[in-house]
Length: 553
Ligand code: GLC
Image (cartoon, rainbow, N blue to C red; front, side, top):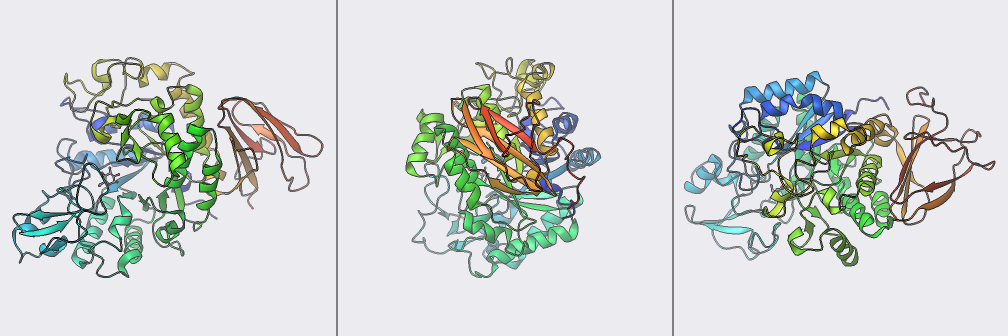
């Protein structure tokens, strides 16, 4: 395959403009600030940014409640600033993905205002209304405990409207072709301004068969195909990345069996089982998740992640696995959310243990797909559980030890900053870690470089090498080159022995890509390696010079 699928070997970094960098001193992060940090991101090895919603919004759900799809929230800058930012990314070879929040709008959106106030309005049918209270009004809530219904009565409309998420997020009606046409317009608009991809929010709900909008069930997956086709007509390199926490089998429907729907999906099954592996020392469930999600079209790609802006969602683990993960990482009820998740950052969950933080990141970079990292995880930022709900993991980026962590020069930051304790900005910040060659930041940078120099992972086929349950050993092949990456989830050193089928008849050497500790194997081509507690090894199989691109298969 010609190597044009950029998203297969990219490193995606996700951030929220409001919490990253404030340039104009008003206490809120902005596009100008972000643009000034592009060299930092590029230096780290980031090749694509995923921005959380930045359009005008009352921000009752951190921007996932939009009031105008065609502009930038004035707190973050102007469309002009946005284009300067995308231009800056382009100059550095970095792509921009943005959140496409189209399952619902804010109830303050002029479309909803028109819809609720006038039954004759063309916008009436853009949302989902019922004259009577539907029987399932208290079913299907996404935020249990914070939301008690999916249908609410609107006094102005004198009718009930459907909202899968919070009450202030009325769902759009996709059975209406005008709504679909408007979404194309939105996609086309941002592509013209320099966007190369969209992280489609809440996809299963947009196409849900059990939603009251499902007047035309055949629309279900066809819509995904149409979105992709439209985006690619406008910009051939544009990708669609689905937030769709669905069972592995169903995911094929999102990719499209003919590779004609969404290009990428977040791998939620791997995410939750990965955390279970850290909690229990047992990687079997993670291995199973990787096998279950192996099947995807050739141009399809999984995105792997550790933490994101939401809770760590443990639903679909077995009860026992969930209990073990909660016990290890969220013993305190205030660390949990919606009965299914954990509202903490990675580093505090792993008690700041550098070995375990490295292990988690090394696993992330080695999973079959494209890694997505969250701002601040490269320096091991913490969380603030005093903040409500998911805000605990959305605090300001910690740049240095100046007041407010260098995020803003304004005395009062609009975005909460972690000041105290071991994760406060005086201890954890970019400036300090940049000076220290052994810091997590510099280690992460080296790991990202290694991942980018190992395109077998993003492009190739993988095998799970047979090993004990606390070991995850993944082997990749691509264009005649191969790598083997081994992880030890246990708190004890482990010795493992395995054979490498010596294709081509030669004895196959393991070349350590991190510290030069190579292994020649025995006469029979068997290797025995000792791996320290929470250790990891990245090997190229063969000679060092068997680098990629040399042997065109
Ligand atoms: C997605 C987002 C989440 C948001 C929800 C509603 O799940 O990741 O943050 O609250 O959609 O838009």
